[in-house]
Image 1 (cartoon, one colour):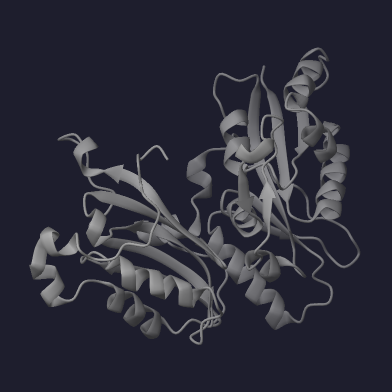
Image 2: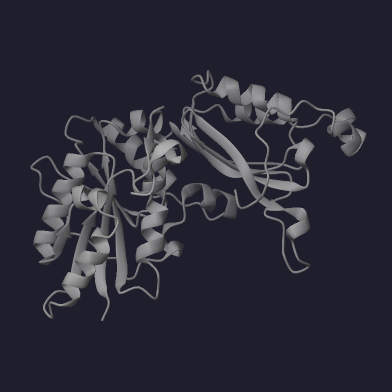
Length: 342
């Protein structure tokens, strides 16, 4: 029988550890702390081996450091051939620091003992935090005591926009936690990120606040890379039309019209990379997107202004009829896309 594993993630180390310890105590589970995971690539595997030798043990709680990307965690523990059965990904969110985490410019070296030297892999703190929320089966909001009702509802709404399918709990003022709810075997279908739901048309967040906006942007025309780069640079500063916290989806540049790009933005970090090449699609394959297909989530956004800015970055009528020969002459400041695998 596979060992049930609950993964506990989050940016706030003390709160994350405290929750993992309480959870393990309630379930009588063995606990693996983040320090042990960070110290050894085999920490989880070793703990699973140890649990498998105890006929009374059936549950393992693993606290992961922020530098462990959540998709790597899911990929390892949700593997059907593994000796573990991932039942939950619980993300601890500190109410006092969520907005600052999503706008952080800090980059962290990802956790791996092979990840050293000049080739070490880094990721932005903001992206690590947002993906933990997006792929969590349960989000636990902590340190809410000082919040007014309006502030609390805004944070709950933002979390539910980022992760509309996640169950949301809170730690109350006395420090007591709501009973942990297992979702059964963890599946990616349970945790579609909010941006995916926006693109799919099944976006149904559990909380609503007038300050939080979720927008689906579609545009058939390719982007002019020069104007898009200028727009991205302006977005590095706070928008006068609100704060764009998260956007993702698929896009096309006129200079690379045969490539579908993946758009990925969290706070001040915005990047594009190739998702698919047209020549690699078979007859039975459908394109990921035609033109631009983006989801945008933010605070106090002026949707009309945001749409106008994106539309202004798309090709004009005269540019569009000029065709690929004209498009090839456009300045393109973005890094080269060599292969879709990158």
